Each structure stands twice: as structure tokens, then as C-alpha cells.
Length: 479
Ligand SMILES: Nc1ncnc2c1ncn2[C@@H]1O[C@H](COP(=O)(O)OP(=O)(O)OP(=O)(O)O)[C@@H](O)[C@H]1O
Ligand SMILES: [Mg+2]
Image (cartoon, rainbow, N blue to C red):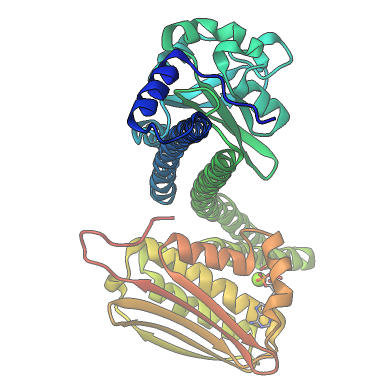
């Protein structure tokens, strides 16, 4: 038997009316029609419900797309900032502003883990309710204040999401912020680069369950970019600091070198003066006394052989003191200038080393050589010629000191054996201030450029160039 639908009082009325309209239809036919109508109504109701749900889902996904668009826009802004901004604090502040202002999030903040106190110190923040950070205790240890999203993200080095802070027991230490600013969800991502945790970025959305895995991935990528840029800025800062320190220590070294060289010159001058005034004149007096004594003994008919040899020794000693005095500080240098001092030096050199032919070209007037350069030129020439005599086995040396193109050029070239500059360098640099190092130091301290070239079997050439500037700035440092 077929079951008929149970009729409501309204349906009874409809049935009655239908009966009146269509007397031809049997009762059973009418009931079937009614049943059919009822089923149709239920179907329509079902469709209406489904449409409503679909509409709601559509609205929710539209809101989600809008939110993700905002987040993406914020991230695009942040990427631009990362390439532009060079000041780390300003960069982080702009990042927070950008995340909070594009309405992707209601609030964003960046904290820094403090190693000793284990606190997470807010570096910068932006958006609604971020002020609460100023008087909140947030840590990254195991205590209750370390169980929040930021502390956990730092401690466990991973992204942490609190879906609903109003009902999350881990958020209890900061419940006043929930009371004041309402419930929401929070995501924290650590800023890590090369194992180093720079800080933590925290963003807050204005409703629970706002973060899905895709968004957390986006935030983690952003955090990695920020950390990379921070590391770059830190590397740059350290590099600059090291460069500054190096520049400073080079300056200090230069200053000390110049002091040392000028102290050495003063000392030489003093010793030369002492030798000349004290030793020289005493020896001259002794010599005179001895010669007088010998004259008297000669008159009395004695044969003072002992005195003869003593006088000979004394003469030798006088010559030696004279040589030492001039070597220490050539008297010409102070009285007649460097050109005269060099001529004197070459005379001495030719006598001492007759096997070395010295060719000299001087194409500059004494008055064109700045005063502080005189001693520099003399000492460089002195050392170069001593080296040639000691090591080169040269037969010819060309010396040239000329003025050309507003510069003084000093060139000393020998045709000796030459040497391996690379091999000699460690030996040279180990003994700062002597030999080649000393020549270079003197040249550069006096704003000159120094160059030495040596080819084994061919010889060695040394060049120094000092630019001559206007009289107002002589361009030459006193050493
Ligand atoms: N004109 C040259 N010809 C060949 N070798 C040279 C010449 N000048 C320098 N050298 C080589 O370069 C080395 C370094 O010279 P440098 O003047 O710096 O030191 P040094 O003469 O050994 O010691 P110091 O000058 O302190 O007495 C010398 O030991 C020598 O081997
Ligand atoms: Mg030397």
C-alpha cells in the first residue's frame, strides 16, 4: 500500500479548493499532485539553502583574496624597501608600517632577542594596539612569558601561529591586550640568516584563524629576506669599521714613521755637531800639542819615533771623525743645499768605488726644490748608491734629478745584476724603516710616488716623482 504524505491544515484547504476546481480528478490523483508539489517545495528550499551557503563561501573567499592581495602588496613594498634602505632601524620601522598600513594586518612589530636577560625587546612597531608592547614583558625562555608567539618563534627557530589569542592559554600573560584590543590571531616568524637569529617579526590579524599555511610561508620568506638584508648591512658596517680602523692605524703608522725619520735626522745632526765641535776640536788641539812637542824634541836632538806614530794615528782619527760627521749630516746640505751635497757625495763615492762610473744629470735649480724635500732626496740617493756598491756589481750608474711637467723626477739606474724584487720583499718588509722600505717611506711621506724595477742580469732602476704644487700649498710634508 502506498503511503500518503501527512497533510497540514493549510494543505487540507488547498486540497479542498483543488477539489472544487477540478471535480473530475479523483482524490487519489489530487493527493499525488500535492505530494509532488510538496517535494518540489522541499527541493526549492534545499536549493535556496545551498545557494546561501555558496554565497557565504564566496564572500569568505573574496575576503581571503582581498586579504592576501593586501599581504602581497605589503610584501612588494617591503621588497622595494629592502633594496633601498641602508639604515637598519629605519628599514625595520618601514617594514612594520608597510605591513600594518596596507591593511594586510592590524598590527606588526619586530623584536630582538637579548642574550643575557632572555627578553624580547621591541625594536619597532606599527598599527592598532602596538603600544601595549612598551609595557609588556615578553621573553624567549621557558617561563610563561616565553610561551607567546614571538618568544616561541625565537626559541624554536620556526614560524608560530596562535589561531585565537582570546582563548589560548599560552597568551594569558598578555590578556590585558586582548581585553583592550579584542581577540585575533597572531603569527610570528624568526629573522634568521646563516644560523643567526636577528629578531622576530610578529603580525596580528583582526580575526581568529586568519593564517593559513600559504600565508605563513609568505611571511617566512619575507622574514628570510629581511634577515639577509640585515646581515648584509651588518657586514657592510663591520667592513666599514674595519676599513676605518685600518685607515686610522695606517695614518698613525705614517705619523710615527715621519716622527721617527725626523727624530733620526735631528739625532744625526746633533751627533755630527757634537763630533765636529767636541771630538774634532779636541783632536785638533791634541794634534797641535803633539806637533809642538815633536818640534821641541827635534830641536833638542832627540828622535821622537813614538810621537811620529802617535801623530799619524791622530791624523787618521781626525779624518775618520770628519768622514763620520759628513756622513751623518753633510755640512753642504744645510749650508749650500742638496745639489752641492750630492756633488760632494758623488766625489766621495767615485774615490771609494773607482770601478763604478757615475753619470750625473741635474736639471733643476736649488731654489726650485722645496726645503723639506732636500734631505729626502739626499737620503734616498745615499741609500740607493750604497745598495749599488754593496749588491749590484754595476759598472755604470745614471743619476738624474730634473724638473719636468710641474714635478721633480729622481731616477737612479744601474747596469748591475739586478735582483728578484718578489723574493726580496719579505726580507724588506720585515725590517721596516731600513733600506728600500726607508726610501719608499721617505718618498711617500713627502707626497712622492716611489717605484723600483729590477731585472736580473740587466740592472735596477729606481724612480721617485714629487708633484710640485702652487706656492700656497707646497704639497710636500716636512719629515
Ligand atoms: N741596486 C741593487 N742591485 C742588486 N740588488 C739590490 C739592489 N738594491 C737592493 N738590492 C737587494 O735588495 C735587498 C734589500 O735592500 P735594502 O736596501 O732594503 O736592504 P739591505 O741593503 O740588505 O739592508 P740595509 O739597507 O738596511 O743596510 C738587498 O739585500 C739586495 O739583495
Ligand atoms: Mg740597503
